[in-house]
Image (cartoon, rainbow, N blue to C red; front, side, top):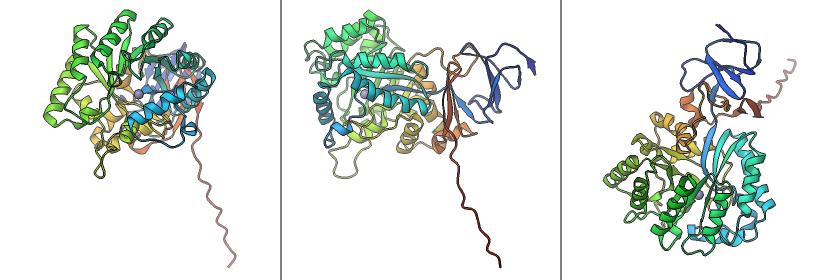
Length: 418
Ligand SMILES: [Zn+2]
């Protein structure tokens, strides 16, 4: 037992993924300053009871600005094009307070489901202007006590075909956007679209996170161009691509080649199971394809991958609770993940997305920020299989939420006199 005196808080009996037995964590000034088997110190103590502690879930891809639109949609459409058109029409009427309120609802659900870091994609174009951007910036400020929100601005409806979109994008970049995205599949000149996004990223020194492709035709792809731009500009480790459903439609030899290409270029991949499964395979009358790229296999092939939320309760995905543990469970089930893959599936919503976002201060280790969520389970291997309750969360050493365990209320057994 080591005598230490300088902690604000001690977590006792926390099971870490890296430890065989529970350990104590000392926190000072919002950082983890000690990890030992038994810390001796006078400080506020929280006994975790041998349960699993994680540094929080990391959602790399969510759209807070267009979440919670089901009440305005009439009927849900069905194809990707229908969803884009439906939201395009609705967003002309989005107000700052409106986007803020819908985004806050999703953000609060994400927080109580244990998410501590999030990259939200924000649409910028002449229909919405900078209203969504302003609202999400306010969310970033107002919820910083519980979650780090990163804003990735992007033109969902194309760039070269949408006069005024680029000027607005540059304004958002000047006003503090954290990353830039693109959507080449909605642009009639996808290569020019990609080139411009890379140029702006270089100019503002930002990471890139693209909506790359969204269909099941493996005969063509923007992948080669993204790899070319990434290598030419030395952007390895700073580019992510989302959906990439074409990878799910490639035969094994072509997938192997694409995996090697992505690994060499240091390009990360984000899979969005709820939307990919909802929108892909619509033309099939039976035996509908899954359209889900296998992130855990790509991760085994050396690619930084994440599984993320994408859309919540809108025409792209009329479901959602912003729970990444549930999303990892959903992904693993549909992706035919075996028990031996469960650890990687948990990585897909924790360690790997933190690497995708280049978050150097993430993780349970000395010197890292004291972000911690406690799951009601004592074996990390089965967290995504069992979906345990998430009992409490901490941001920079300060508690952000608690969830009391459910209690069974057994009926009292009345014994009648004989
Ligand atoms: Zn998206």
